[in-house]
Image 1: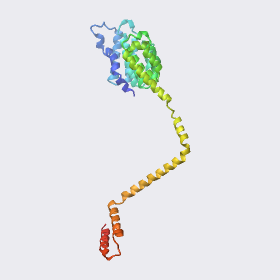
Image 2: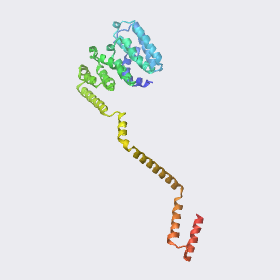
Image 3: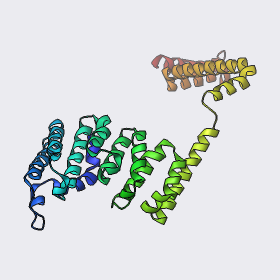
Image 4: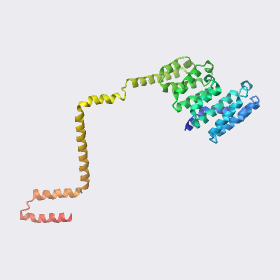
Length: 305
């Protein structure tokens, strides 16, 4: 059902998968030797990516990610600097697998289960969660989590902090109509750290447009009230309007019948008959002997017709 989400997220998610989706990246000459525990997780990550992208076996991809997380718990984070990349990559593949399995409702809980709290989620994972729940129309799911993540001081220095703030504004606050909170986000500490001056101005214009739209909807009459007002105003003239409608229907029916009959009459024969009657009754007197030849000719023409 949500396969389009996976393909739409390739540009975002593959950047986080790419550093860890092959064993060769962990054996670069400049990198320290990888431990046996992490090596096993790398193999599982490769298998999960292959299940997801090549075989389209989404359940196997998710199960492989789960086994990778189990092995990751046995490895201390201090052992290798690539621990965080592996964890984020396993989570990225798992999110896409759950989306393909139409189990998107459990994505946020599954992510928080492995990261402990929203504040420690990587930027790419936060972006994917916002886009996923926006795609399925569950904008409110990420409201509290996104707010907590953006107001965590440790996250303001991350490279994708501004992107998360932009997605949170466009896909959570604006769709929910939280214009006051959106304005505070843009003009507060989060906005100063996440947006440039031009970006803040564009965001404020968007928020103002949203506020104007909400005010217009509030001032417009409700759908239930409008028909009642019209009915009350037109009640004294109801009988007249009904009669006019009846006359129009009769007129329309008569025109339709006349049009149908006119199509059934040969036009040429009708015109010729009218012309002959005109000659007989107006231009000639049938009682005069001089008109007999003309009458005989007309009779012959009528018989031929």
